[in-house]
Length: 158
Image (cartoon, rainbow, N blue to C red; front, side):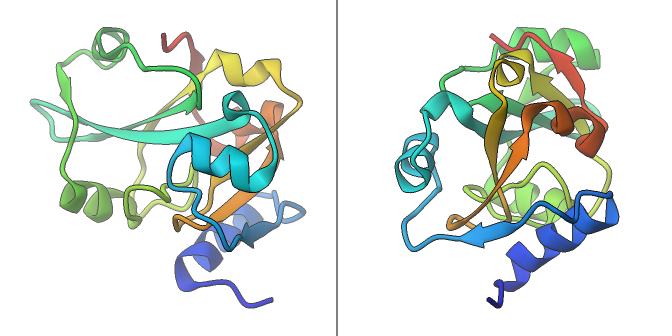
């Protein structure tokens, strides 16, 4: 099966990081939202590792929060961890800093290093699912692999 260029970029990043056994799949249904992804995959919404990009208000640096699909991120927590106010960036910023469009942002394969935080609640599940570069591409992984895969810090996001 041939992957779209963005999904292939994620597959390549997984392989480069030593996770080549993980396979990116493209589905006919949308996986843009956590609920859509869970329905298309057949898992719970909580098993969806949603990738949210924030922007440091002063630095302009991208910040990735990988949260359980059921959780809302407490931005005050992220602000305290990065040492500056954060804001939701526009779609152009997200694409420029990650190389991906909103609705398909993966945990790996970004065009530049991104400070990453991981929702500790994702570790309650053996298997989780993450976006893989497009609103139709995903991959399954062991929750314990997410931190070593991304270099992210596990935190309480709610």
